[in-house]
Length: 471
Image (tube, rainbow, N blue to C red; front, side, top):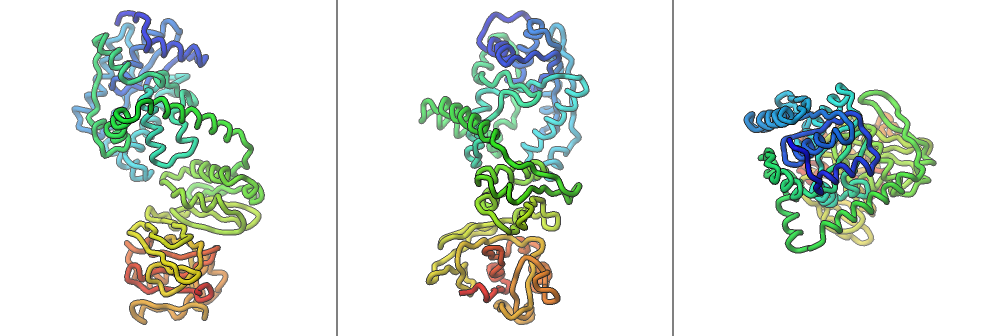
């Protein structure tokens, strides 16, 4: 390959290293075979003599597509690296067949996220083996725009809206200020080919729908939107940096392996602004390696209030006994169908299996057809570990038949409150004959830590109502 004349793309990459004061001695370039990464490889190869670093490449075969496509991409990258003068050593990482699907199921975040997780793990292993001081990826300005749009549509705060960082640890992104059109023009003018990944046109992926549907719509109807979105990302990044500089308590680890939990003093947690409490909870999810998305409504509920309480939802348990806050995964009940809905007024409320109507009833409200007048705010949630009922006098049952009844029942979180009269909701559901499909869907109605009712009739089972809280 001949030396490059001065051009905007290669100049931007050279200036990136000079302006960020990056002086790597050995670079690992992540190359997929697409236009962006082929351009990155070519320019890094040219600049290696000018900036005095050793260049290596890595390519990953995810084995998610037909063999001729995925293996073809890998072969193309190996050939490109070998054709350079001097040649660039390239490591090929072939994932076991089905590994992406298995990882997606384990992490609960989909195939795209699982592939990324495995790909970056391969980058890390290769960089360690080669003693590379940095890993360069070929993210472009287009990737940045798509990422910020995607995170906005997913309800992201300042951290997600900051977009892709120019550098993170040993990862560098020299093309982040370069447009994809510039890259393709650069390659075409030098007769350098690249591969097209057929999955990039698959609109079952959110990013592809944004790329092929939303972005063209914005281009047609909103001139200047790209500058505005990139400006938003920059402002969000500055805000995030400022927020991260504020002092917050540190989570302490308790327990090991599956029983791991985090804790901090209650006074320190309660003293924080709700926004910082929310961030602490989100950081805790990362520390606990929680793969599933936890509903924002649940996190907001925890962040917006203080004092003694215990709330379980979406496979997580938060407890505050007045001295210590504990945040952990619910290893007894880790369900993908867990939910929590806050009810403050009449209206329609969406549950995992449909909507429920909440109507006004005097000064209170009625949930669906439940034979009780309750007073907001209420929580409608899935069952949680530790939910119990009592065969005390302060409750009543209504429902299908007497054979499903367990005398009179009132409900609280802890069996300790009722002693010998306690009956777990799990056993209650068993007596009712609740199917496995419905166990995590039957709404538990709660207020201020007390469970007021179980709305079983929504799925054809009995209802249980605690008369102490029934108007």
